[in-house]
Image 1 (cartoon, rainbow, N blue to C red):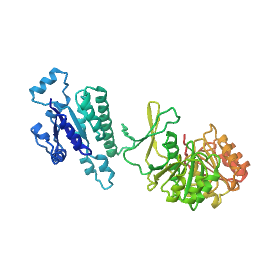
Image 2: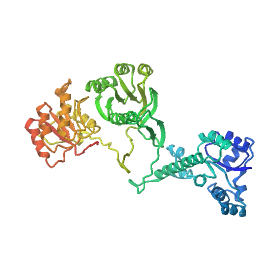
Image 3: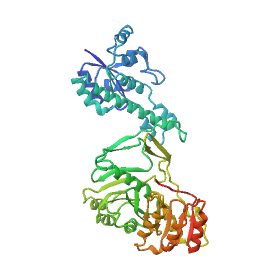
Image 4: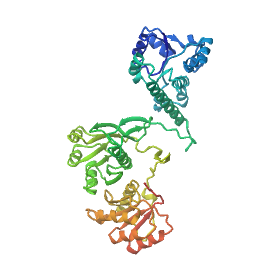
Length: 509
């Protein structure tokens, strides 16, 4: 028995071979303009849609498949006698297979030269409609949207066309595809900050070794339109990534991208354990490593410059999970690749000053969305609130500390010089404990005599300031804004500490 297949594709990958197999399986091929021409050029017999509908394409191709003779053939239930009688009365031939992929809207808007008018012309109307109709009626009509499925579809047609599980699988894929397509269009046209419907779509990048723990399966999905700050351009070496690897890598990359000078960030469990900046990347590595030689073991390291051989050799001497950089010299790649398990990731920092505008976080039953915290305070934004004025070197250190503390989990307190972290206190239920942790770790380091302290939020009590003063901290930066600000300022004045406020809080829960 002859069956009818409708083919209309923009992506013609594998189309000829698939169409030949359909003909061998006694399918009649029906197609539209470009697809029909491509198949006929290779000698295949194809009936035009206009031959089925008796109506020519119009409006520059905007109207060609939207016709009852098409949709009747797609939507009629084969086991419904009344439906089949209506098809017979209207002289409509059932359609058994629909092969459609959509106008290349995504590829069009990726070109920065694309105008809105050009983008709108790539919004497919007939394609999604045919796919949705076929997918709705998947019990009788096989909907095919992905060229990668052509081999399995051929196998299915040769064996067991009554396999409803496979049909349902293809139908679900169609609705995922059209939903993602519509989401992309909605987001392209959207100009509202927080629209009444949030339409998000992601594409699977890769399966991961495991989730937060080894018994949890996981995968990495990324947005279909690449962001300006891309987490991974390419994995150059190493074993598969895990869920936690990517979380840490993302945190490290976001942090290192904020620095203009050569910088190295070592991240552990979503918190920086060592941050160093200097005139060259090798010295910046030294600063980051010396910040916490113990915690950096097994850590994730991100740098914002090409890694050279000398830096790579130093990295090679310790165990690191991941190294992320915009580039690796040939010698550096050879040195680091000697360890088979280390992951070497190349990341695009070209547009580091244009990060994603929003970030999302799942909660039970929903999603939280907020603007990404990319605000950076300069020394010109600081207000000196104490009698003692900070020195030029202290101001530089205070700005560096402010850069770092915004990436530490609250309650966050860091002790730094102007080029490296000395102690990081994070995640404590009260600020004085974070302060004690940061200072006690810092006291073990060279350079502590030049240390400053940075806090991600104000001091509601003066105990942190007093503890810092008793341990030789000479300058503090904090947002200010507590109703008890004056208590902390008075404590700083008592010990001759220079304190500056920024007016900006950087909680990171």
